[in-house]
Length: 257
Image 1 (cartoon, one colour):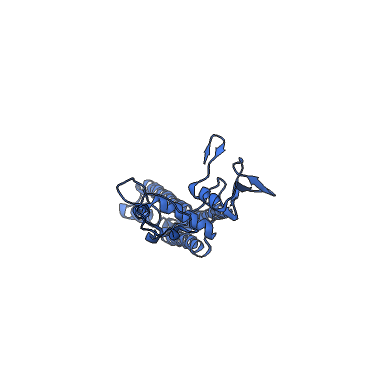
Image 2 (cartoon, helix red, strand yellow; image 1 turned 90 degrees about the vertical axis):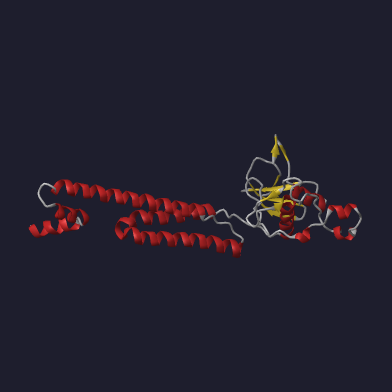
């Protein structure tokens, strides 16, 4: 974070800096040959904290790989103050002091894993993640891949829907959505990569709905034209038949020639 021109690290980053006895942070900028000082107005790719190199986005943020809350992380502050805890429990550990009891201070946070995780637990998970070097990565090519996939499927639906029909196009669209979601999940689970399926799925759904609506409106307009043109010359039964099956009009004209 920045306050004016002064950068301020997060609690987790500062705890690690102090734990390792490092004097400062070193930021690595995109496209640079060497390291850059922390806080420069440039896109970051990683920040060095003591011996740790932490990959970040351009704003110096880390994607947190949330874990299931663990009760064994906690030691009761009351037991510590009463002298009931062996001090060896804290040896070679980074200790965070925080509130986990409900109703004292509302520091319960919702995460993708649980709806009520103590805020201090989230800081502990981030510290653990940086110590282990297990990071989620949003690769540079992710945005381009998402846009390209969306353009290909969207174009296929736009040109394919009038030819293969709404039902077949819906099958293609649903299959594409499943492929996007499945690829994203496999990349996250097996390679720790973040590829967003929400944008492609949303765009594909909108393209299908708009293309279907336009096709329906074109069909309705054509049927109205046929009804208007032939209502004065043919019985209502044959007019409705031609409106429902306009291809018969073409065949009849050919037979007439």
